[in-house]
Image 1 (cartoon, rainbow, N blue to C red):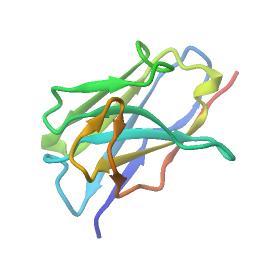
Image 2 (tube, rainbow, N blue to C red; image 1 turned 30 degrees about the horizontal axis):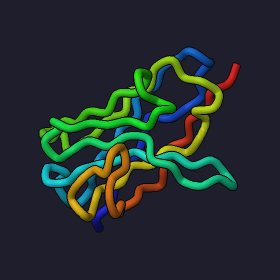
Image 3 (cartoon, rainbow, N blue to C red; image 1 turned 45 degrees about the horizontal axis):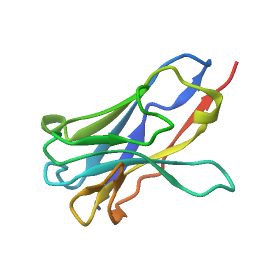
Image 4 (cartoon, rainbow, N blue to C red; image 1 turned 90 degrees about the vertical axis):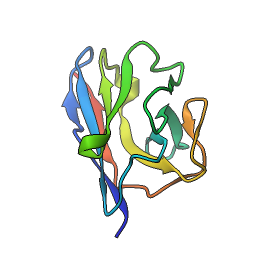
Length: 125
Protein backbone atom coordinates (compact mmCIF):
# COMPACT_ATOMS: atom_id res chain seq x y z
CA UNK A 1 0.00 0.00 0.00
CA UNK A 2 1.36 3.39 -1.02
CA UNK A 3 1.03 6.00 1.67
CA UNK A 4 2.71 8.79 3.56
CA UNK A 5 3.03 8.81 7.33
CA UNK A 6 3.36 12.09 9.21
CA UNK A 7 4.80 12.35 12.71
CA UNK A 8 6.33 14.82 15.11
CA UNK A 9 3.32 16.87 16.09
CA UNK A 10 2.44 17.74 19.66
CA UNK A 11 1.72 20.47 22.15
CA UNK A 12 4.19 23.34 22.29
CA UNK A 13 4.21 26.79 23.85
CA UNK A 14 4.20 29.91 21.69
CA UNK A 15 7.73 30.59 20.48
CA UNK A 16 8.64 26.92 20.61
CA UNK A 17 9.72 24.54 17.89
CA UNK A 18 8.69 21.22 16.39
CA UNK A 19 10.03 19.13 13.55
CA UNK A 20 7.51 17.21 11.50
CA UNK A 21 8.48 14.17 9.46
CA UNK A 22 6.83 12.72 6.38
CA UNK A 23 7.92 9.17 5.60
CA UNK A 24 6.91 7.15 2.58
CA UNK A 25 5.67 3.60 2.81
CA UNK A 26 5.67 1.34 -0.21
CA UNK A 27 7.38 3.72 -2.62
CA UNK A 28 10.34 6.05 -2.90
CA UNK A 29 10.00 9.79 -2.57
CA UNK A 30 13.07 10.51 -4.73
CA UNK A 31 11.13 11.47 -7.85
CA UNK A 32 8.38 13.49 -6.22
CA UNK A 33 7.93 17.08 -5.24
CA UNK A 34 6.41 17.05 -1.75
CA UNK A 35 4.16 19.56 -0.09
CA UNK A 36 3.08 20.25 3.45
CA UNK A 37 -0.48 21.34 4.08
CA UNK A 38 -2.51 22.15 7.14
CA UNK A 39 -6.18 22.29 8.05
CA UNK A 40 -8.07 23.25 11.14
CA UNK A 41 -11.57 21.84 11.78
CA UNK A 42 -14.12 23.68 9.69
CA UNK A 43 -11.49 25.47 7.64
CA UNK A 44 -10.15 25.01 4.16
CA UNK A 45 -6.94 23.08 3.69
CA UNK A 46 -4.05 25.40 2.92
CA UNK A 47 -0.62 24.86 1.50
CA UNK A 48 2.31 25.59 3.79
CA UNK A 49 5.44 24.69 1.87
CA UNK A 50 6.72 22.69 -1.07
CA UNK A 51 10.05 21.14 -2.03
CA UNK A 52 11.17 19.84 -5.40
CA UNK A 53 12.33 16.26 -5.92
CA UNK A 54 15.98 17.31 -5.81
CA UNK A 55 15.48 19.68 -2.90
CA UNK A 56 16.88 22.57 -4.93
CA UNK A 57 13.57 24.44 -4.94
CA UNK A 58 11.63 25.35 -1.81
CA UNK A 59 8.87 27.83 -1.21
CA UNK A 60 6.66 28.90 1.67
CA UNK A 61 3.36 30.51 2.40
CA UNK A 62 3.79 34.11 3.59
CA UNK A 63 2.34 33.16 6.98
CA UNK A 64 5.26 30.81 7.72
CA UNK A 65 8.10 32.32 5.71
CA UNK A 66 11.18 32.88 7.86
CA UNK A 67 9.90 30.52 10.57
CA UNK A 68 9.45 27.15 8.82
CA UNK A 69 12.04 25.22 6.82
CA UNK A 70 11.28 22.31 4.53
CA UNK A 71 13.98 19.77 3.72
CA UNK A 72 14.34 16.22 2.52
CA UNK A 73 16.63 13.27 3.00
CA UNK A 74 16.06 10.97 0.07
CA UNK A 75 18.35 8.34 1.59
CA UNK A 76 15.88 8.12 4.49
CA UNK A 77 12.87 8.49 2.19
CA UNK A 78 11.67 11.32 4.42
CA UNK A 79 10.72 14.98 4.12
CA UNK A 80 10.84 17.30 7.11
CA UNK A 81 9.21 20.53 8.20
CA UNK A 82 11.16 22.39 10.87
CA UNK A 83 8.82 24.82 12.58
CA UNK A 84 10.31 27.56 14.75
CA UNK A 85 8.80 30.56 16.52
CA UNK A 86 5.46 28.83 16.59
CA UNK A 87 2.32 30.90 17.07
CA UNK A 88 -1.14 29.90 18.30
CA UNK A 89 -2.45 30.42 14.77
CA UNK A 90 -0.17 27.59 13.61
CA UNK A 91 -2.43 25.17 15.49
CA UNK A 92 -3.70 22.73 12.87
CA UNK A 93 -3.48 19.18 11.63
CA UNK A 94 -0.51 19.00 9.28
CA UNK A 95 -0.40 16.73 6.27
CA UNK A 96 2.16 15.94 3.62
CA UNK A 97 1.39 14.91 0.07
CA UNK A 98 3.22 14.11 -3.12
CA UNK A 99 2.70 16.20 -6.19
CA UNK A 100 1.19 13.76 -8.67
CA UNK A 101 1.82 16.38 -11.34
CA UNK A 102 5.52 16.29 -10.41
CA UNK A 103 6.14 19.87 -9.36
CA UNK A 104 5.54 22.67 -6.89
CA UNK A 105 3.29 25.49 -7.92
CA UNK A 106 4.74 28.19 -5.73
CA UNK A 107 4.46 26.85 -2.20
CA UNK A 108 1.78 24.30 -3.10
CA UNK A 109 2.36 20.76 -4.37
CA UNK A 110 0.45 20.56 -7.65
CA UNK A 111 -2.23 17.85 -7.78
CA UNK A 112 -1.49 16.52 -4.27
CA UNK A 113 -2.02 12.87 -3.50
CA UNK A 114 -1.10 9.90 -1.27
CA UNK A 115 -2.30 11.77 1.78
CA UNK A 116 -1.32 10.51 5.20
CA UNK A 117 -3.40 10.64 8.36
CA UNK A 118 -1.89 13.92 9.50
CA UNK A 119 -0.19 14.99 12.71
CA UNK A 120 -1.74 17.42 15.18
CA UNK A 121 0.15 20.56 16.18
CA UNK A 122 -1.16 22.60 19.09
CA UNK A 123 0.49 25.87 20.04
CA UNK A 124 -0.78 27.04 23.38
CA UNK A 125 0.44 28.33 26.71
